[in-house]
Image 1 (cartoon, rainbow, N blue to C red):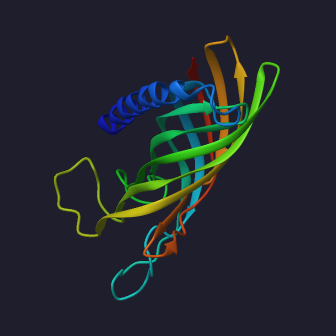
Image 2 (cartoon, helix red, strand yellow; image 1 turned 45 degrees about the horizontal axis):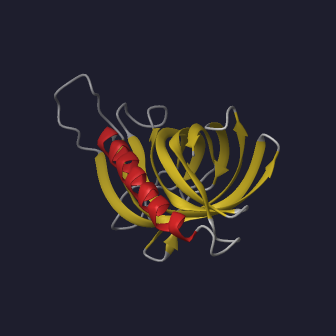
Length: 217
């Protein structure tokens, strides 16, 4: 998990500086798409998810019926390049984990890692900025469901299921930024990540709330 986060930060930084050197050369060519700085930083998030983590539960292929629900939380990072007065384009990536200890045996969890390309429109009003946009990308989800067993022994767990699947992610969001200084912004955001696998929207969905620090230039 930590390696995924640090990799996201490194890739984000490299792409941001690439954008900066590329578009700074064309700063005077267009008022709408002129380079207007960049920002990047880290964000924490928490949310509530509910739904069936497996497709066709209770079928011959999946011999159980289970509906997960609970708090998911995690962290990640984002980087954006600003164009003109209203448009931002960038990348972001996050890791989010939902423990299932209340419903299943200890150690059960559902974890998602995802990232992609984002675009949003923002409006500045004094020290506040308001924005809305979406991220389109991809990710993977790991499901470990232990229906019976214990983490305190070395006995084999017979009634346990582990599954990993990949998905296309569509993540609309809305939020606000507050400029603590010209360089440091405090960011608040709410999103609703939709995971699409095999041309089907996952039943395990819900909102997430983000808070983080962005460094602007």
